[in-house]
Length: 148
Image 1: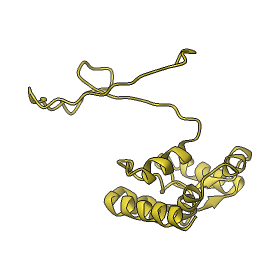
Image 2: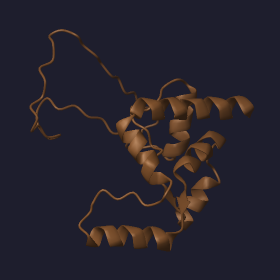
Image 3: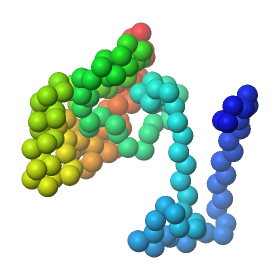
């Protein structure tokens, strides 16, 4: 952080006084809205490592297919086995078909676009049944980490 050799992050949780619910129209810039963002060099590897340590994400990342760009091809070289297995669920698309699909949907003014035949049902299941997707991803990580 800012070139420092050491950085410490402390998170607090309190139970009293009870928190009042935020209004439905609240925005991240409002007082009382809490959020934290962290940057990691390899998100897939970090998610696999966290799941192996027993800390699963609140939502699944399996509903989005990869598009076979040079960057994705390069990232795959350092991806842990469990991360690669999770990526297989939604599939991989070549650049042209993915772009053609997204462009056609944008022309129809559709903005929630998930290209790929395999990815669409996976994304729907992840959206409507997040606990099922979390269990599936946890089992995949456990299976791969035990077999390696």
